[in-house]
Image (cartoon, rainbow, N blue to C red; front, side):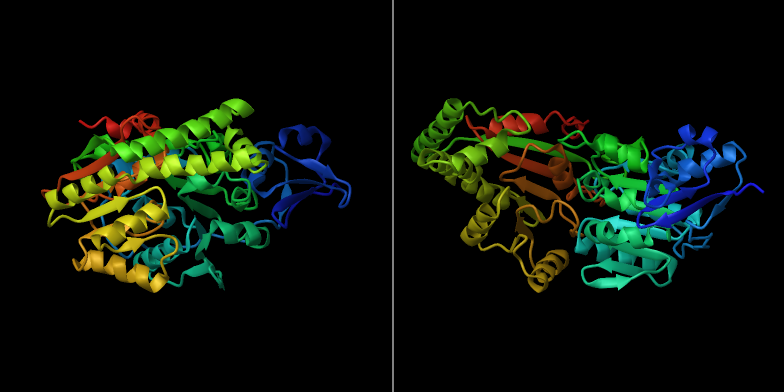
Length: 459
């Protein structure tokens, strides 16, 4: 009597026993394991393997899957926008897998809610921060009216609807990776990281959804994201939704001159830094340039001087006196508006906050104080918030209509995230994002990289 093929789940992998010789080349990523005298495959290959077995009419015993159909009823009746319906249709057409790319504030979470109700499988939502974990928890409870599990930040409770952080999922997915049929990756551009990707690799879930404003990564690893979650099946750009489901907006770039004394300091520091790069033949345009600079700058007094010079010229361009004067001008110009002031670093944020007596939010801000600032911004107690990077993503930011970028990186994602903070639709609202750029500094090139993004091509 012929023994049927068996599929088991084991610590984030699949064990396949009694695989016919003729079928072995058809099954993706299977490897012979001498320890168990069976084939193994990454858990995320479950769907492909089962599909091959069915296509070849191979009988099999499946003890890997520990989930069944679960009815979910969305208790809130809300009609999706046309583009949200299009995204849902595109995801289904892509085999119920794939990445949906929408601007911040365009309702990615609502698309996920509708797909959870349609897919009818136990669902695990992955998020990058504790703040986002709690936001998703509240949204899921509100829409489905049932217990929602939390896995992360000291919480270890699993339910058929559960929210976890990427960090916790990496550690624990090998133990529960066969319990969920639908996995959602919010801010999924984080997923291809060296560690985070195991949250997807260790899960057998056949249905997968990635949500992000910008799937592209500096390291080009978005291809890994598409391999683990599915191709980018739907994208809507900021300008396509501007004035419709998002507020109309404009981007204003203001090039400012440094004070003479600061210009002299900047040029001297930059020369010291660039001379060191030239002397040591370090190309900062390569992926390894920064690591090489850090290593070589730690090897000698000249190197340490060059590193200090690097920090000095950065700080002078980030937070020049003239920039701070422009911040005050824009605050005066937009009295009565809700303004978020973004900086590249904490020092600049605190410097501006101290100078103008404004609340500052950074990663160093305690939870109670942060909640007080956000609630005050929401109820009008504060009309201005200063932040470094903590509000880029992962925090539910109250209504704002003006953003002032004092300093930032060349990251397209960071720009789109910051822009998204002021695009929430409101009748009669016109959002405006100001960028303050120090003339004749490296900031010019940083801004030039950002401006290649379609979000700058307003209608």
